[in-house]
Length: 183
Image (cartoon, rainbow, N blue to C red; front, side, top):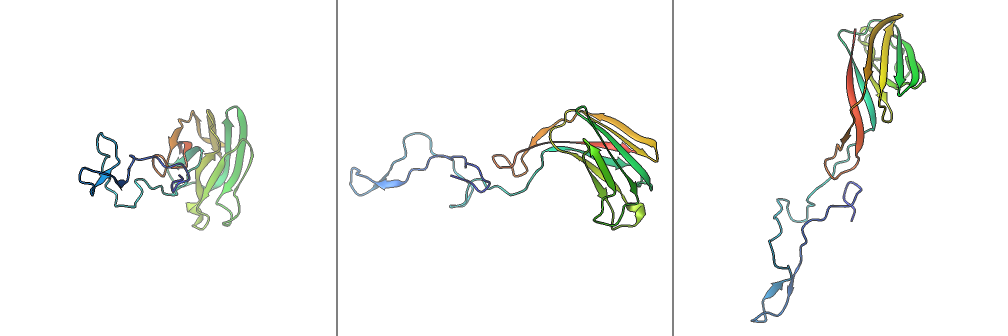
């Protein structure tokens, strides 16, 4: 039987119906439950499943949150990456262009980089998260502004299984998260 979250429902204790059967007096119903301990009582009202799943999603992968100690100054930014031996880079400038236009252009094994604040005053523009697809085991990141290195860090992501809808509910994702101080 399929449950509300797209997988087989976990069987509960067997409930046997009470059926009429012969008794010593011949007119009392007899339970067809086998001898043994009684099934555990549920706190759920009758007709409500013992476990319901929500429909939250999750994403496999690795995220590095960029944490500046101050606002992101205007300038030309370069992000260099090495992901499991494959190199990539992204470059662009702050302040950001108009909303809907990408500030960064990327090549090679580069992650998605969140650009933040396009509708805000230029002093509030910046970069937020680096999102790597898959299950990278070794990630090297270097961030530069106007040719000067701001930060460099090596990561070995520690993945864990995440079930945002609870145990026994899909989806199940493998993800990892780290932070990187900038400036």
